[in-house]
Amino acid sequence: MSSLDFSIQGSQFVLNGEPIQVISGAMHYFRVVPEYWEDRLLKLKACGFNTVETYVPWNLHEPSEGEFCFEGIADVERFISLADKVGLMVIIRPSPYICAEWEFGGLPAWLLQDRNVRLRCYDPHFLQKVDAYYDQLIPRLVPHLCTNEGPIIAMQIENEYGSYGNDQKYLQYLRDGLIRRNVDCLLFTSDGPSDSMLQGGMTEGVFATVNFGSGVQPHFDKLEEYQPGQPVMCMEFWNGWFDHWGEEHHTRDAGDVAGTLEQMLQRNASVNFYMFHGGTNFGFYNGANHGEKYEPTITSYDYDVLLNEHGVPTDKFYAVREVLEKYLPLAPLALPEPIPVKAFGEVKFTECAPLLGSLTALSSPVQRSCPETMEALGQDYGFIYYETTITGPRNDCRLVLQDVHDRALVFVDEQYIGTVERWSPADLMIDIPEQGAKLGILVENMGRVNYGPLLKDLKGITEGVRLNGQFLFHWTIYPLPMKDLSGLSFQALEQACETPAFYKGVFRIDQPADTFLQCSGWKKGVAYVNGHNIGRYWEIGPQETLYVPAPFLRAGENEIILFELHGTDHASMVLTDTPKLDKGSSAE
Image (cartoon, rainbow, N blue to C red; front, top):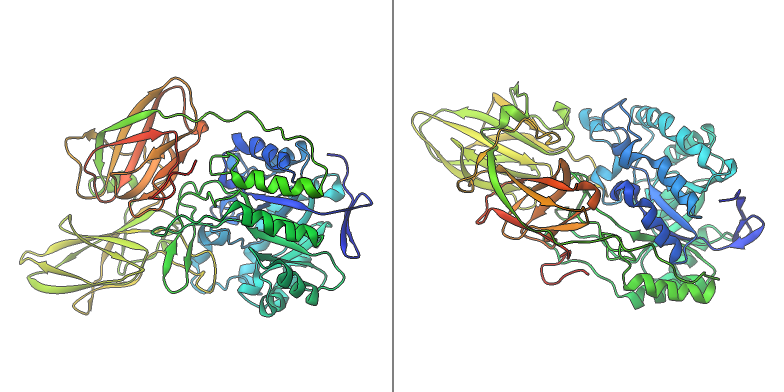
């Protein structure tokens, strides 16, 4: 792309001396395999958009304090360069906090090793961590600013801050920190279009935008009250929505989306579609919400938007392009060649490794007087297993897991006796024989809260375990981040385990292609394909398939490992060519 001179003049954006409406679409490089970045960006351009927007998740780029990653799916510079190559401008949102239905809103779990840390405010301890990260990140972005002949036209200083707090000193510290690191493009905030949110989230010298899904005129009117005589922009036009486990899959009519867009264009507004292409929460990176109760987000981030989870244009793509054609000079529609999708058929699982017999192969245990959280033990994601011995005899004992985050399977002498869930906590009744018993508790971190006042979301058993009111002490704890399964010792599968176990299956293909792992018949767990954690499955839905992108596969032999928590009636799965994101229908 040629040099960009992007600025605000009066009530409009100006690019190289000419008025411009920014027509942007959100696509997160960290939710799409790098091999497909260019394909998705070309489709964004083909739809009539001139800009791509992305968040930057701190927890991806600094997974351990002081250890930084900018390679592979974390190569944000390559993503920006590809956007430039296809002729798109870039809006980047590197706020310490991003929300995005992403684990902990993008904040790294290691921040919570200090239970006293104050998040998203002028806390010197927190800001010291932000500065160390920004000293690595921001110099990588500066060469790509439009002021340095790159494609980045604007950068966000925090994310929907007015929905969280009102610390102006904090916002100004972030603003000044970007400027001090040579960020001289347009700086902006984005907030809900209400008085309290705008008063909390706007700050001096920073352009304000608003986020909404409908109600164009009143929401832009409210923005203009606070920012008169400036351009109006919807930084997050919610044209779809995300799903929690146990809900129905969210959809929104394409005509409704097109009509709302037309109202924005008629007002000469700029817009960023959140999302244009959602992608996938690979691994353990899904977030969670906590309003009245804890609600974890599913693996798919399809979002029901213009490109579906595996990058195919939807009805919304064509409806939006039709509207844009009325207002902008667009080239004839030219899409990249479709990426192949194949059904590879049944995969049989022929080997098994029970979890409780594999603990020392996966973890180095630690001894503690009390159950400790994942964060206290330096663990970020996955599972954690707690074990202690109880003297007997004791009958009709009430077992209480005090504040468990998030879902615990309980075992007595390695026999499963029940599950305790954070969103519907219940006590379990157990008997302890005369010789005593071993109590085991496997806790799953189902995703840290990514939005609202309950961000500080420690994982594991956060308080303690009581038996008839008596706290239990002296625990052996096995952190199980589940990043490396190579230490497992598999045996031939004779029948499925009733307790948590790893199941391994092998299949052969001639040529990799996108495919979908059909999870019906299995209850709850995590799937790995050739070592790639492709995400969680759960029989409560709505999601029934897991997306497997072709770059995770190879010609010849491929391996699937399932970590299944509750067993299965039949030890096989099917690789199909059709995603199913709603228990009642298929998503084409």
